[in-house]
Image 1: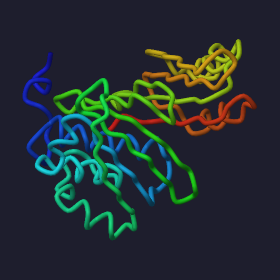
Image 2: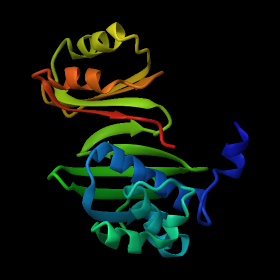
Image 3: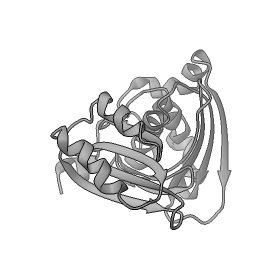
Image 4: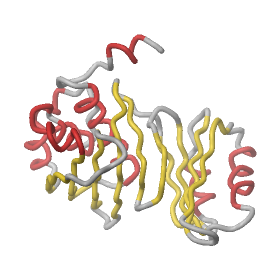
Length: 220
């Protein structure tokens, strides 16, 4: 355990879980969407739903969606900034029983028409995990270079994608595969030691089996 696991990150707001973590979830969601967001329907669960106003959780998520880090003073004026950027915001709360008390679901709409449903949890000390993307199980921390691929489940996909990374000297540190069922859509999440270049992302995305390929850099 390091010192930042104990005292938390440099941040704006009263809570590393409810403010810093929320901002990181928003920022990761922006990275995953890969478009300028124009609308966000945000649903808070558990303790997020009970305390989001007092802890500024709503402002933190919104600021993250607009590209602000956890230490950005602009978090305080997130609603005004959203209005300037023409980002429409809708906030809801839910008493649905979820696995983690600090959970937020973001239905995100991009300027070019892309939509994403992203579920994230704040784990404490500013650490987060994106747990679902468009209904698929996931586990993205925003602490590493990550390649997210959505494809039709079939044999040979894992070694095929790995070969693209290997020939470009990109080392895999961790890999997780989730699927809805045999031969149905699947998600492969690959953490790497270095950034996956845009050209490599485009090569992988050009494969007929691929639905989507997104490279995510570590959060600043």
